[in-house]
Every structure is written in C-alpha cells, then in structure tokens.
Length: 100
Image 1 (cartoon, rainbow, N blue to C red):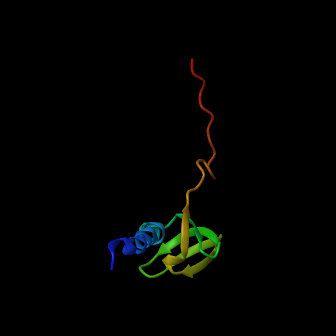
Image 2 (cartoon, helix red, strand yellow; image 1 turned 90 degrees about the horizontal axis):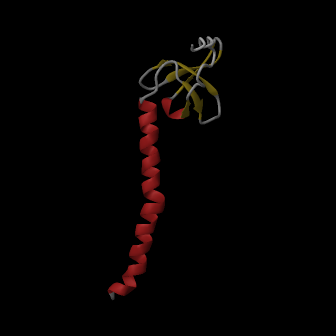
Image 3 (cartoon, one colour; image 1 turned 180 degrees about the vertical axis):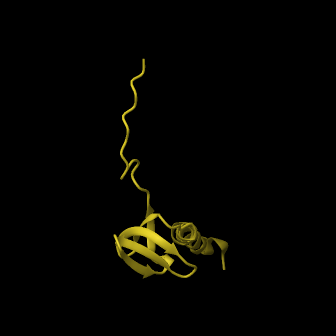
C-alpha cells in the first residue's frame, strides 16, 4: 500500500477526533466538575427543565427545593447547569449617601 492512499483515512480519523471526540470529553469533564461542586443554597436547572434551590447534597443524591416546602430527590447527574442568582435579588438596596 502506498502512504498517499492512507493519507485521507488518517486525515478523517484526526478530523473526527478534533471535531467529535475531544469536545465531548471536555463537556464530560466540565459536567463532572460542576456536579462535584454542588452545594446547598445553589440555584440549579435540571435536565428536565425544573429549577430550584439545592437543600441537601449527599454522595449519590440531592434534594432540590422547587417551591417553598416542596422537595424533590434526584441524582446529581440530573443537574444541567448552575444558575447564578441576580445581584441584589431578594435584598433591599440602601441608597448611597451623596458625596460632598
């Protein structure tokens, strides 16, 4: 076999690696880091689209408060993303004193 005949096949393998396999591994690593960093009080969205606040985190499950007093148990892998609360949300802001 000629090496020139193998070049397109090698090129396809390299392209698949950089376009499909490598980005998927990066997403898996980011998801694992996010799940490992889950803590009570974090606002999250699940893969099913439910949003709530994490109440309890255990090793293989967590409790998500989706409404005041309503808790749902789920596996941590079901968390799609952590939603950062808006600055000042739920807090009264005091007006700044005028500068002389």
